[in-house]
Length: 145
Image (cartoon, rainbow, N blue to C red; front, side, top):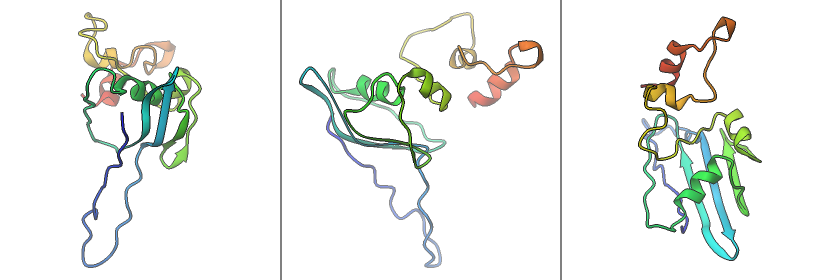
């Protein structure tokens, strides 16, 4: 996957007063990753802002899974930087990603068909109430469904 940088534009300036650019919640800058000489990612940059939805599309072998695994802590970039709220973030595994609030939901028809979408999103990291009971209202509220 060959990289690109998204241009946010002028950001809706008014009355001639400059507005500060919003900081991406998660930003990958000039990331590259190779496996046994195969370049899966080449200088890819991606900015993710709060309340946005994104689709990642491309041919088989384009690097989509590698990019998602890099954001989820499965792979570290050979080159490049991962930033969270403007600060450098190094993920040495999926537990680091989880602790930083990053979760990857892999494309599967159903994870646990007996659970709701919100419950599936929080598998392994459910918010708890007193007595270590699962906070189902918290799950629904935090999943924004």
